[in-house]
Image 1 (cartoon, rainbow, N blue to C red):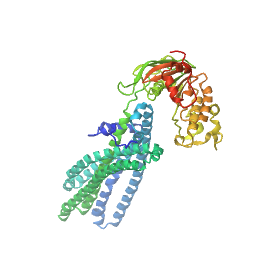
Image 2 (image 1 turned 120 degrees about the vertical axis):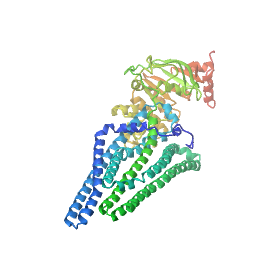
Image 3 (image 1 turned 45 degrees about the vertical axis):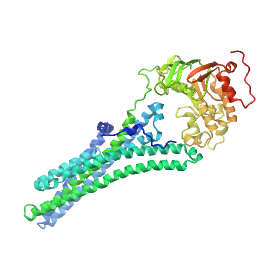
Image 4 (image 1 turned 135 degrees about the vertical axis):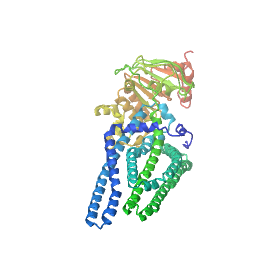
Length: 601
């Protein structure tokens, strides 16, 4: 089992962020522009209400307290309370609208990623661990939520508040305002230092989160192997290494936070001290009122609040950019197997399958198949046999168009499968694999697979392949819950369910990929009996290591190193005493089954 610390393509991300990603992110707000505009207007109103408080304080001190006007002081206090109440209502509305918009954006983005994953070719999933892809849909999208809810729109409110405060301070006393602004260059220096370190730490955190998810998914999926081979300690040690690296990356980010925020608070305190020293002297000299000095101190605190908020928004932006790099790298992955602009529609398929001089390689020119040429007429059956790695499953992958051949054509009813509409192609095929995948749901839903197949047909298909023998003994029958990966069912029961699934969808071409190799003798007998029903009137392509299951097919193709070396019926191939005969002898050497004497070569 992998330790999940090997180099991966996503680890190449480095250098400065591509800020065009930010514009792509903003595009997700376009459907909700009215909500965003409303939130922006509420933020501007909130900023205006925030500006009123210190000015009311100045009026209260200079106009009413200094003159002993209790009535005037009460009026200004009531007005201040009304402003605070209005600010509460506005802030509530602004937060609600933004949070609602952020949740909708996350929903849209997750649906886009999920749909995009369905369109990618299987080779992409061979190269990318499932845990990493899950991180894109979950953790990375969550990181973008803060960008939409408290970053993109509120940053404009912070800027508006900041400019408003600066304007009021310059209006009240421009000399004292310049004293307050004197520490701003120090703030930019601290921010620049923080930005450089935070960018790297955020990327590292995102990278190690993806590795944790990948390793965890792999470990949980293979838990039986881990426990059987006593790999608990080694697996734990490998996870500990990844977890420690994730912790170290987070500690780096914490270090920059721990320095940055106290530094901002220190600069804010330095600004207040400068106001007290300079402004206090002006008050003593009679050039400035006490109310103006108190208002300046309050404005100074409000001045640094949006600056601190902008810094926090920058942190959110850093995290969002680190996640967006991963997300858009996934979304930019182009599907390799796309339908033609004007695909051929064939709702009704006869089932004639043909491979015409097909050669295929998964990588470069390491050919897995070489010049494969055969035809299966409608209603006929062909079996593919050969040693492991001979290319049997690859032939199935090309017919189902999980991959496209580099040379030659794969045809269904004389039409290249690349020209057919994918819905028509795969609607005509049913694939029964050795490793059956069942989804969480019920027995019936796993046979139906989301289609509108009526209950009567589901039950009829189940009876035809003897699924009813164990289903009728279950508490809820066909509505019995199936756990993840069919954990509550035996291997044989899952195989029978896969046969019922194929029969219920009534395909014209049936593909069996070693579908009986994992079942016991009794279950195999049930399946062999069901195959008579399943194969009737259908084109069938069967992959099998157990040669006893294919003796009645119309033709057997023997593959060796990617080429068809022999072809014929069971008896004809045994008579040739070639590759098939040797396979047969190896399989039954310990049984009292002898191959017939050859009739000639």
